Amino acid sequence: MFTQVTKGIKISVRTSFEGTFFKNYKVHYAFGYTITIENLSKDTVQLTARHWDVFDALKDMETIDGEGVIGRKPVIKPGKSHTYSSGCLLASPVGAMRGHYRMVNFTNSEEFEVEIPTFKFAAPFAIN
Image (tube, rainbow, N blue to C red):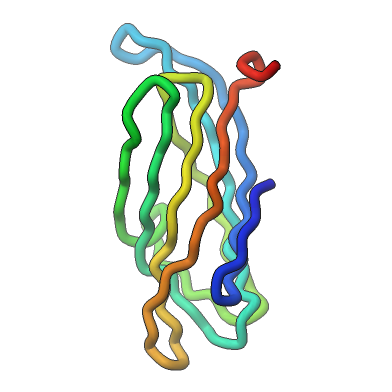
């Protein structure tokens, strides 16, 4: 598990290898990840946007920006958490992701970024 805390918001990430498949006559490697966003602060916050840098050993880095996570903009009260799962396809059996969430603090209307720790993907057969 990969974990990081920024401004009282704890991000924990678990990854999994989901398998390989062919698309457009090329093999692709499917990876899943589950992220838990835990509010350790005393203020209610809302996740409004995300930024990802996706690293694939066989391709250039890809940047992805968007609103919320999987179609939602969760509000997280103090002591509560939000968990979601998603995934990515890589051309290589090895890669990584990192990024940040854009949050709003409901107490003072401050916008801030919460770092998502770099987490790695590796198909079991690619690890020595």
